[in-house]
Image: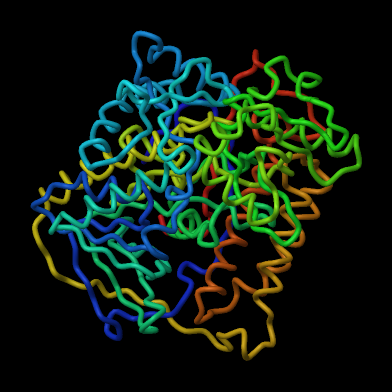
Length: 555
């Protein structure tokens, strides 16, 4: 059993069914591999690249390789690069301060110190970080960091450049196979061990059973349970939901970070406006042009994300406005276009010239600090299953993620899980044997037979979560949210469906329920979890983690 360091509060939640869709080992095709990686973002691809090249690796992606959260990361990756001006101890301190006294110091130090080596690997793949006239890597600064340590590429398209180089490296490896546009329904378990996964090919409308010696979960975040989110459409919490159904322990899911500055224009996509813009001197002002952040925190615009998000919500309420503004117009226009070309283009689509106009912004769900609990090696509580990236709870982020630490974590834990899972797989003999597993069909399986509108349930869930479990929460609202989720769950989770949209809805309900249960149990304000009916956490009291256990899981 995985160890859970620190003080823990167990939250038991019964989830049914064990598997979402019917299958039978005798009725479906089978695929065998040494290591299965579920997820094609930076953590998943880094894990695949770290597996011993003598082994076969299968990477299963819900969409295309370029559609992950990693590819959309704007600000950059944080690491101690310019050592004479910075130190690992500084980065560790900043991370611990931002984390609301809930970070695991061992995990923080491990990840921070592992950063430079992973950056060197990215450079060897051909990643082109921005450089100055001398050819040295340019370093930026973001909220919560006391030093310039953010490596960025193409101004504000860091994730896209890192993923470009990493994808090209994956394609050069003959031992790695990638399935794109393949939806992983569930993890296969037998005798308390993860044996692979059930994968659905939407294009062929075919379910396949993938058997693996070791499985790595790298499915990303849960942002789509909220109406306002920076996450892509694929971020529906599938990894957390399938791991929880399989019996893996999860941790601290109530901590959902809202990015303070998300573009807010009616009819427009909720595009992220990078933290780096405030690091470069952008000012937050309200509808009256008043620069308000100093009223809430002496660090002003460079306060950690949870502080800035709460401050924006308060200022919106004070001014009866649906948004505030990010103002960079005091900077040189040519410099703005060069430093933030992506944001210039996004805003221009809506008639906003950021060299002259203020950018309308408001907070949006951005990152899950909690996830599937892993140890310092990346192992989950389910034998044979590992997790890396946003889907995992490593202990790095605590109650509030420090800006640009996510790509760092994906690199360090991705490499580690791939290397260690590969070592175990290499020691195991090849056995091409399908186990006698099945999930029987139930009566009245599909929504079309019941008149159920799955899309309407999804939209309603997102609205409820945004309104009652967003930046600011209270017990009454959370209880209302839980009642609504339970009502929808009684209908949706009792049925079997045949569409990705419906399976996503089931996963979203499971994850949203865990988030709300955790928020109800945490009677304090800490980091990204803001209870308006509770005081700030007491730094003299021991911090408590929320441990989520599936009461119905096989033991």
